[in-house]
Length: 451
Image 1 (spheres, rainbow, N blue to C red):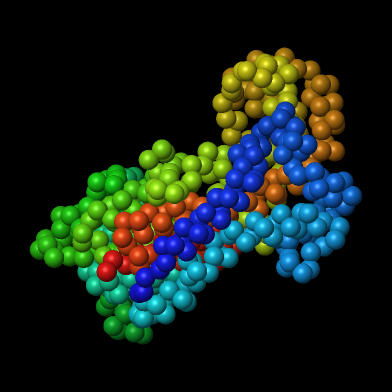
Image 2 (image 1 turned 90 degrees about the vertical axis):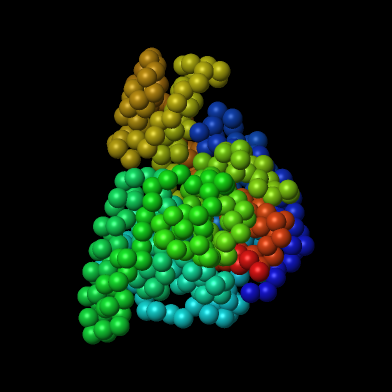
């Protein structure tokens, strides 16, 4: 795989950060405070507010779902909204062709990755997991072949779906690493189920049936917490005797929070780590050590990192954005501020809105969960609901604007991690769109092959 331009990565990251600086109040906001902080009038651009007043949510929705359209076809009645969305989409990772590859482009550059048949369908995995594991296993096998890796270390291996697929379909020795003993204990059971399903699916193909039978010996698991000081090649040597000259392909499918930057650090420091394929998630769980990792990376607040986890493409595909729980919680905040004052602090309400048939029921359950003794009459609850109900569409439009910015925040995080690898001298590193973003919202992987 040829080198990628560090200059282009820096240029892309600079453009993304400049855009995020323009919309910083939006990405740093919290939906709970929508009413109490008057976000509609203070954070939404005036031109977009005026358009909303003219066309309402019904006029806004088609533009939101289409993402603004092409530059030459901007709708006149929502032109400011369309321009906002168009500018945001230009900062999405999928628009950065110089540093982001498609899955097919990656395969062409690796010049390998013989397909060994697809994953067996059935009850082993959900549709989403089946899609992710099938794609990731094929890419990881191609990376192992291109880099000369003898073993795979599956970080955050969970229940063992990816590791089992690599051992089963591609004949690779795999070590699954997970900090949860419950996950590693169940990984062997899931591996057995996948072997059984594959044997049944390939009952007429003797070679593949034999491969499925032997896969159990190629997949091992270990319960441990991985950090930057972990050496994947040492783990392989510990679990495969005589593997002193091993080369490792490090993979992580949705490595949560700080596990992603830990994997990057371990990959850089381990001289026998030959290749990397890493898909991160749970950006809101990143600690100080996990952001930024490059010298030019962003320092993003927790609200912005939580926003990055929104499934923007799925929302656009389904054309549905549930806001009832957001409306209830923002309205509850008005009551709490009235009763307890702005300086009071309370905990998280959690996901109780779906269990409530009315706002009145929501208030009672929420205050009970928060342990608050709030004296508010039933008539006040009803009058508050009636007062703010006409503004529910504004809340939905505001949340839609924020969701449209989610892929931009994620792009900044991804480019930060990619630039870190280039700063360490690993120039055969790029971003790849591995998955369908509607099926799997965290669809981009960081891929690297050491020279």
